[in-house]
Length: 342
Image 1 (cartoon, rainbow, N blue to C red):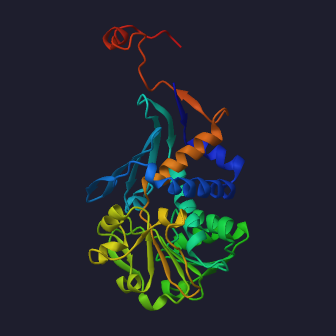
Image 2 (cartoon, rainbow, N blue to C red):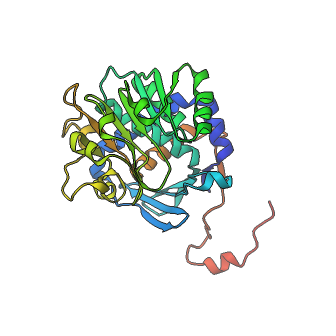
């Protein structure tokens, strides 16, 4: 049998543990796995692009476990009544290839994305950061706000989106949680006075959501919306002024803000910062940029964390996913024998 966590049990887990505690714990697992970077077999995600969006597989393994995530990105889905992103994932035992843990990952990806941003910001943002601009008030915005408060102590949010209904939704969800929420009049207005700027927009275009003149010394940029070819958010001039940090350079050069830079543009992979091999922030005036596209190691961490949290509880259901004939060489005989009635 294979352990399974579905949507209902995922939301029960969040209700019981609380999103802040979950994202704080996830941030630790993610940082720990980045420190084990050299032990992973890594590759860029496998993407299938259509005029409607993208469907991707994100595989990764270490010496004991293999993981993959199936995820889509369809920016026009909300107007048709569907979510922009949906996902599920699996952990398998490398030693025999059997799947051992399967989970919904639409919600889990939202948690892990925000936890990753916060884990990175802990080593790249100024320690006195208290105000964050949220440029893009879609599905990820509330998770980012909660993770940054839990890990860095963010108190004030300056929100902007081209969609007034998205802003209204974000304010409605975050105001009761104790944040000081300010609605900005533009992306530039949101960035004004912010210590951290998070850009998270869904439009699949080479856009300039944030201009170079909107970024001042000492800011940390958490750029998470540019995550596929032909989709960027930042004025390319910002990258020339910033110290740029990425998850997995080969993937980010295809999908991230690095699309706008020449070959050889200098970046630092985050595993080097987490292990102390290279510095993160070096002074208060430095502009740091996390060009995040989402990498499979974060899904590996999220699945590990969830499995460790829910094993032995009623949040797990066993599913009959793998055929296991008594004689491993007689699959035909097994398949011709009717299963006993439940």
